[in-house]
Image (cartoon, rainbow, N blue to C red; front, side):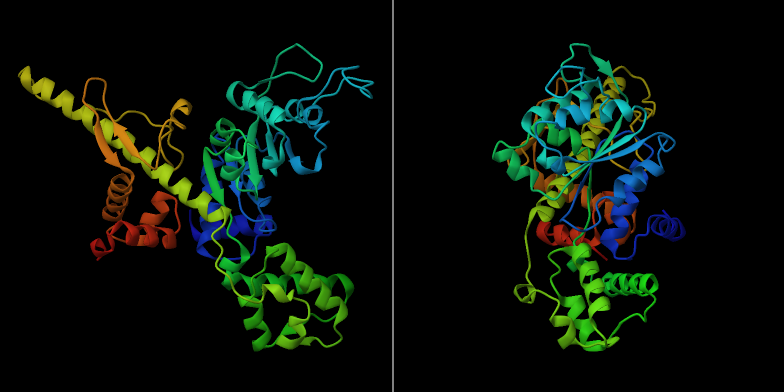
Length: 407
């Protein structure tokens, strides 16, 4: 994706910022847009997760069909099934007419399930069936209906914790999380904070016909080093408050500090849900890719040995077709997604070849080294191929002891 294409996407959707993690998230959204794979967008509340399903829908073949955003946390548990899948007349008190649900209305289009972690277990079962078979039934009906809908989900919850606590189905998690996109928190986008703040202040100034406020150097330093627990939503709120209340248009650090909660002034390093999502997604993707590569290598070696024994000249084998998503990983059969125990040993075997045991670290080390070699040890390019940030790549290289391989 070129810099001009990335800029076009940002301008179209009003996205401000140029940090590497944000750019990577946008690039992934653009690449998966042309597929029908399910996407799970993760990130803290207020980081702007709602932009990514819009990008995916707008650049997909479904762009001329309906796009329906659904806030799962805002719909009462008693009516969520009816909202999503529809109901028949008389199926419950108040059902005076039959009604289509969102999955029926969005046939051929895209549904964005925001706060998907808030869905009740019974609704999760229905959602899993739609994702697996495209089939659903209205509430109060026994008739099975079909729908063709692309699902993009988002959450700010730790779904792995929810799975352990029995609040979220593991099989649904793996079905939704085919392609993970992590949106970075504002505190990890220090270079974007002042740009966003100026934009919000400018909007207020234009709307109410007043001069825009300006931060002095001390206020800017404070702004960029603040924790921003509420992320972009909190930043916008502060910008609007100061613009409306302060008479002076020149804002100092002392003035700015009055609008920031005191408990968040200590800069903290939080190892929260987002880090766990990123690490899990990275490890799973690397494992999938290297396992399939190794299996293909084994098959090729067996074929060559068999032909050599028969006295024939081995012919190059055509590469097996892969479901390629503009540089993403090969498609993995859904049934395999939950069979790997990533904390133990991964077995790679052919039909009649004894199992070889490969540790998770071995798999990741090999995949990273190969990516680095393909890009002449340029970390940035290797990270893009592996769909991780350059910072994450550096951290994993250090952890796996391969930093000395970099020229």
